[in-house]
Image (cartoon, rainbow, N blue to C red; front, side, top):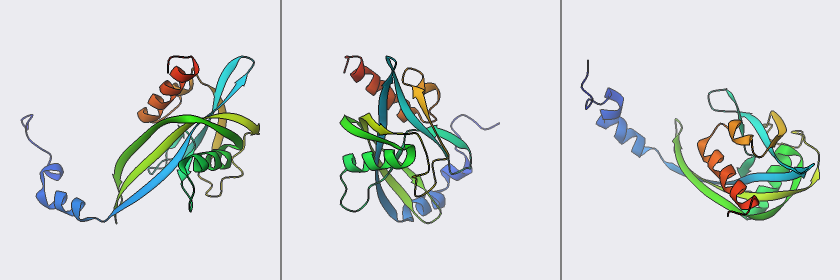
Length: 169
């Protein structure tokens, strides 16, 4: 049995580390967030289901890449409308998350700006999603949505929104 200090061959292999560093870096910027609607005195947010890289369906906040000269706020409004069918009005910035992931040909440094939006019009649909990434969309109670979301960073963003909406933020 290996000692606790023994590294796996892959992690400890200098050639593997060097090849990972040698991959070109691509920077990506996206925006999205929580679009909130109050129905019968309860706050709901629209979440989408999409396939992850492994093909598993995961629930997440709507978001996508900035296009052209869009600001993050403009991209958030557009992406949320495309992926959920709901037009929102930005109330405030919630958080910016950045992370890295690697593909076969490059490493990606991704920055995602999340905003809190008020729903102003629309009906839930994924039909407007030009990339057809959103497979389903639902209104979920804001106080329950963290149980549905796949990613811890998005659950922290919901907590920040909750603090703002109940007056703690």
